Length: 218
Image 1 (cartoon, one colour):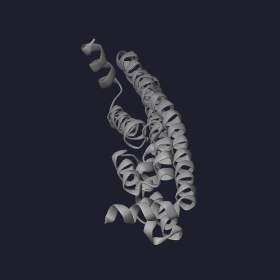
Image 2: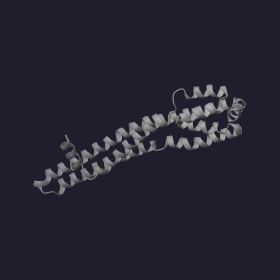
Image 3: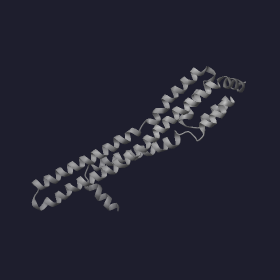
Image 4: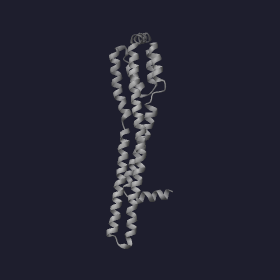
């Protein structure tokens, strides 16, 4: 099998190398995004419900601790707002908006490159196809009759192998892009909704939180 793969790669010519680099980047970016979007950036289950209970109880320190322990994008946004509860609701909203501007780009970055790289892989495969066909036509037109069949076969191999390898890179890349783009949008919506809900809770219970916070600080 390894010999067949080696022959497949060698027969494709130099275009196979840039396609291989694109495939490595596609899978590297996809794995990194899966880890970040599904595990690191995603808030724990029932995070908002727990925050609601704690905030309505007026326990500011517990709310800060809960948001910090969540180790998620939404948790960091909420944590920044809770740290400014004693400075008024305007400061809370400002802190939430400021932190959201830092966290949301982390969620949205890299994923669009998967679509770009998939198209690059497909275009490189097409380039290999064109080069292979040019080589094949040149063999038919100019090669010595004794070498014509070998050169024709070599040109067709370049065309077919690069096309196949380009699609091997493009198809998974587009699938990963669709899945991760959907996850990115869902996570962004959850963060926007969650931060607004927490902000409204903080504003509604501001007096209780400030009192609790001062009591804990003594």
